[in-house]
Amino acid sequence: MGYKVAVVGATGNVGREMLQTLAERAFPIDEVVALASSRSAGREVSFGKDKMLKVEALDDFDFSGTQIVLSSPGAKTAAAFAPRATKAGAVVIDNSSYFRMDEDVPLVVPEVNPEAIAGYTARHIIANPNCSTIQMVVVLKPLHDLAPIRRVVVATYQATSGAGREAMDELFNQTRAIYMNSPVEKAFFTKQIAFNVIPHIDIFMENGDTKEEWKMVVETKKIMGPRIEVSATCVRVPVFIGHGEAVHVEFEKPLPEDEAREALKAAPGISVVDHRADEGYVTPEECAGEDPIYVSRIRTDSSVEHGLAMWVVTDNLRKGAALNAVQIAEVLAAEYL
Image 1 (cartoon, rainbow, N blue to C red):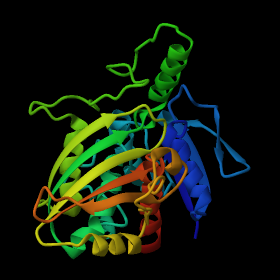
Image 2: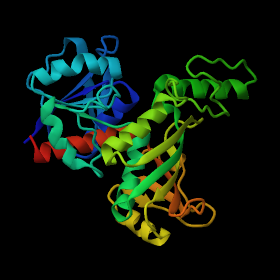
Image 3: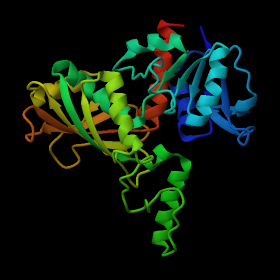
Image 4: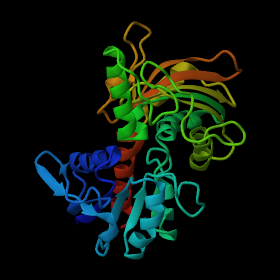
């Protein structure tokens, strides 16, 4: 059986990856529709190697007959169109932050909590977590199964593509300006991003956290359980694609690093590349365009009684967004529709 699938935000970074991932993984599709704002209507986007789709205007689209919607248009747009799509009978898998913390909307990473997909029946909406949360919880899950996690301290190194095409363009333009000895113009980011790092993603909250850091805390608890404490510092770095994370985990009981390494090797969606030598680890540049979450630098954290530290990278547009959404759709189609 094939499905009619709509991709909302099809001209954006994540929307294009959603179309690419659907084609690569041969998702059972009878018809696929590319949707975006009226400004983008009429443009063409690729689906697979040899098919082009003409973009249709989201505001004018009739969702009747559409079974699955993959959505990455931004929170305001998602809030506006999703009820219209679900009323027409579609299930919306949404990549925006708008629905994630709603109690009656499942927040799903298929390698971690696929059973939560069953809750889609409440509103016919499934939320895709934040990109940084996804790659972290996939790595935490097999470790948590061996030894309950008490606390996680994470510092992220997030690529500009996570903030959209304008952010990538600003990194490119500023880098070029510096090399050409031209004035560096700042429009998108709060500080210069070229040859710099910015410890500020999303808005500041009253307690001093940014909203990106808050997302990692509350989303991890919703996905893995409320007892896990998380402290996050989220940093934007001058990289186009690929998020890195330095993750320090404190457990309630001992977990030897060799046992942790073997558990990670056996876990779905993870590739362990951990050699204590030059080039014995994976960087964001190497993971761009790849599906796995790469784990390196696995070692004991001696600053706490039962601690491990590790380095985690993945393509934020793929597993951090598009691939996770398509994997949710695969489980949904195979087990629930």
